[in-house]
Amino acid sequence: GRGSFARRPARSAASRRGAGVADRHTAHMARLFVAIWPPDDVLDRLADIERPKDQGVKWVPQDNLHITLRFLGDADETEVAARLDDTLFPAATAVVGPAFDLLGERSLISPVTGVDELADVVRRALRGLGTEPERTRFQGHITVARLARNARPRRSAGHRFDATFDVTEVALVASTLRDTGAVYDTVATWPTR
Image 1 (cartoon, rainbow, N blue to C red):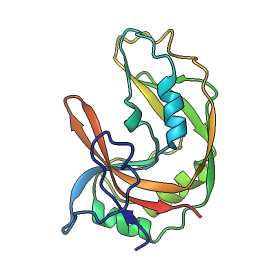
Image 2: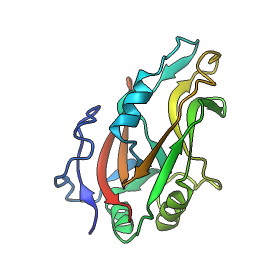
Image 3: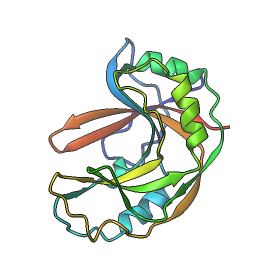
Image 4: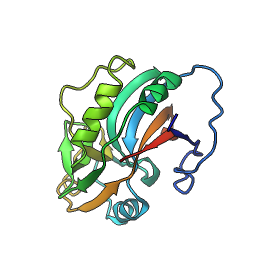
């Protein structure tokens, strides 16, 4: 297939896009999502933003910042990768910003536009896979902080941030939940065209 298989150690941005062969010989159910990893310069700019100590706001580590195109929940990595191998991903330009905003009651986000067609291609390719229901409407964003029930993100929400970047690849990512938070591991990547 076209997919480039790579494993990345937890919290290692440098090896996130490395090449190699995944150690996957049998079907494996994992908590999966398809995502865009922003380029390092955008991640560095996000990491440099002041992170106020607002009550109930837990900032997402730099290595975990991404744009989710489709969250699958538990799914068979081999089946998902096979479907994505047969998919042509359109080129896209992600436009991030213009400011941090609330998404629901539990997330502080930076909105992202320009990747809707890419998300739709992924949604169609993976129809029927995973334990999570498909969202009816895609809302592109990068989650920059998680909010507790009692959160008061007064100084965090509204913070200005904008960036634009060309999306060069789409990643299949495994998520492992730990007491310290989620650890993301890139399983495979596919280029956009």
